[in-house]
Length: 164
Image (cartoon, rainbow, N blue to C red):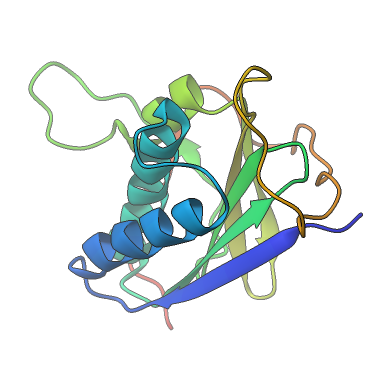
């Protein structure tokens, strides 16, 4: 199956999260998903959470990928250098972290993780509302999805530096 895929290398600096959001907004607009669509806001928030997890918890560069399916769905993948599988974490009341993947679980239609090279990739997919206009010509067929073993509700990346 073919999809339109774009990717961005993200440096190991938390300031890169803002750059990733700006880049994602421009790519979404270029794919026909307008800034004013709820889908765009949801995807930018998901990207922000996944890139933050990768950069903050590994201290290494990461790769952000967006895959646009012909029917309008979008898959976001963030690959990092850590081979540690996500482990469940639960934020309490005033905790300032530990909610990222709970947000992903609540906003994405599907999400999971898989080994990639020496590290891993965390992914999520958001389906486009069938009533919304589809992206224009040039987008490939849909991307396969499904549950990846080891992922589930409340799963979060455990802090800890890895060798880049």
